[in-house]
Amino acid sequence: SDVMMAQDFQDLTGQIIRQVIELVQDLEEGLVSVIKKSGRMGNAAEETSGIDIVAEGPQVNKEDDPNVMSGQDDVDDLLSSLGF
Image: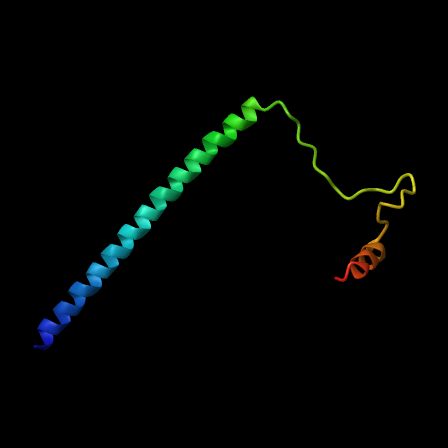
């Protein structure tokens, strides 16, 4: 009886492990497919676009513009006036 119970438990455990392995393999195939597709699209977009992307950074107040923050205190004051 004990031997039969041990074999039954081992069989069920093996089935669960096999299902998990199949699930992981399917997930891996799907992710590889997504990566391949996005890689092709990214390369095609880089080749066809002639637009240069300029990164926006913090503004430097060269002309004493009142709309440009000069420090963290100005930002804190603005946020507190807006209720944050």
